[in-house]
Length: 228
Figure (cartoon, rainbow, N blue to C red):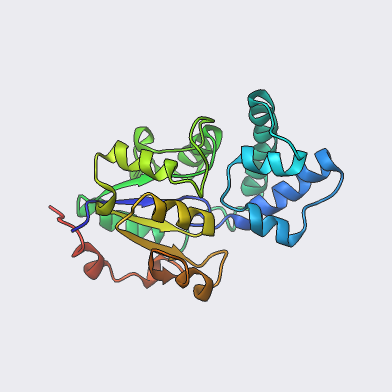
């Protein structure tokens, strides 16, 4: 029925929402003189750096500003990750789940609002190359419209050469769920790392909600695919 699994990364495979919140609070204080409020952080999670910088600056940043300022914030975020080794790992059960998908020859990919510098960081520090091919990862390269626009998931599906209805998507953010749904994903599984199960289950397109990957019945999941 399905042919591939596409994961968002931040908040989905890596529970790092608090690190991004802390990084944006710190960086916002540098550029607008105050930290972000909780409701502001909730509104920007899952969005592209350009979108967030537009919100902070109250104007559209130039491409040069987006690249420079976005990377300054991401450097803060990466330092926070490295400085907290107790939380710097994949979500519970994710490694075993990915091992099972690989053993079943089920194609996997990532569609994330992170920039390339963070993708390189994850491949280097978290060794995700054992499951994912860097060439199949779709990320914020400055040309793809950010979530909730469907573009990033459409691009990920095209890289995998599958029709949208053949993709299973794992997402945690409301904007990401909207993007996957608008891209026509056949099945969306929400991860309750930054939103409640009730809120996630109420979103259009969501069929299941998990707290982490230990909740997945791998035998039942593999039956959704024409695995070899």
